Length: 196
Image 1 (cartoon, rainbow, N blue to C red):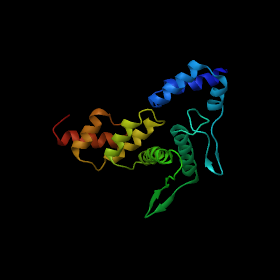
Image 2 (cartoon, rainbow, N blue to C red):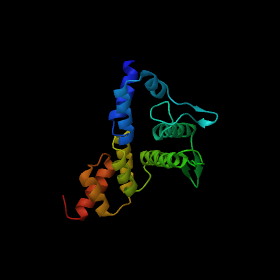
Image 3 (cartoon, rainbow, N blue to C red):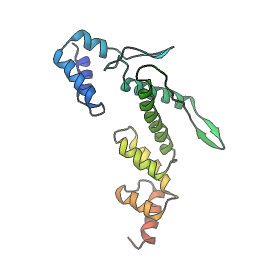
Image 4 (tube, rainbow, N blue to C red):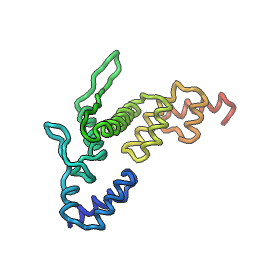
């Protein structure tokens, strides 16, 4: 078995982004050391074809599971982003519709996709200075390992520019300002509450 293939299965057996049932299943696959099964599940990546994303259910990159569905969703979201968005009332937007049918686990996959799609949309909003303080806090709690977080945090500071003094202080006491504008509103909030 190739090192690359073994690394994929090890990743699925150890990484916390996978649920415990998936990690346990990957560990069993490693213990059983059935190269044919491991290759069938992990050698290739399940492809999105004209009929959508289809394949046998199971764990691995070449099986239908919540992780391959979420990966396909992220890929689709990146294509939508690259193609550009529309505008309405002077604001840009992108939208998607996520549905499900009677197929096995269709509803669960749609629910998982909805969460990923929502976070991708929020990620883009914060990077363009949009969103709310509450959404930003919740997003950062859920997605501490997402790419581009330093830039997102800098641009996301803008969501506090119209916030209450308490909200500004609460955020910037724990997250030092990055941009000059954020430093200014933080300093103003400190001064107005008698702090220095």
